[in-house]
Amino acid sequence: MAEQADFYFCNDVEIEPEAAAKHLTPAVHEPLRQLRERLGALDAWTEEAIHASFNQVMEATGLKLGKIAQPVRVAVTGRTTSPGIFEILDLLGKERSVARLDRALELIGPSPC
Image: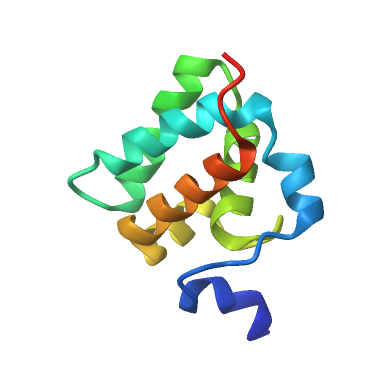
């Protein structure tokens, strides 16, 4: 149980290679970048504000929540299973969440666009 919650307590998380290969792909680079920018600009770091940022990216990209939330989950927890993504981001805080998204974007590489 403690191992499943390590991402809450560690500054850096180890991303499972299988999860990265499946969910941190060039196709998700742009939506993930957009979400990172929106989250980074939030003044109020609340579940509601985080959820609104996801909704804005979904509207802009036409993607459904799962296509954005799963790469974010992998980026911030290192794995494909976790509690709700909005709750995780809220508990991790803005600084750690944005830093982990930055790291995921670096792992993906430059945008294909």
